[in-house]
Figure 1: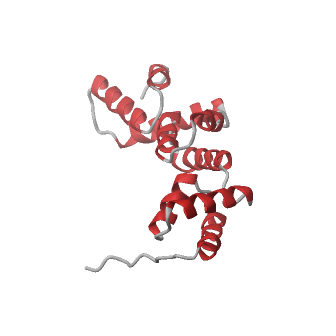
Figure 2: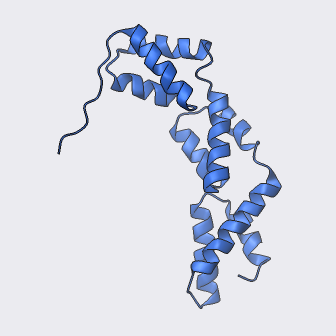
Figure 3: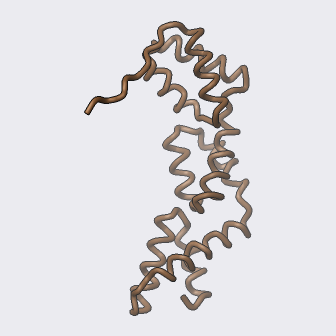
Length: 160
């Protein structure tokens, strides 16, 4: 099975145009763009020059990316703050911007999402033993990135 051929670009102007299109399509982190430029075969000086031009042209904005990532992962996938934080760290977003992005999540919405996640999982569990059932629900919610103390509070106050 043949692997798809990656496009090699040697002209920085062409690479800048393609990178602008790449960034305009959806929010990207600097690291994602940097990886893509290296994948296209550009050398380090050109990569850093293109990234600075993308930032100046407002095609690339780490703060905007962090907020969009947080909103998307929480809204669509119901991830908890821990998992979102790990995802942003993996994309090499600075800690200051991660904290700022996590503050955009409303506390009431967060608790409601956690409750929904636990209730949805509880319906699928066939475990009869209450202790094992509670443990499985707790592990599942923590695996989705929710904090252990919040999960424990929800499980304590519900009869799942």
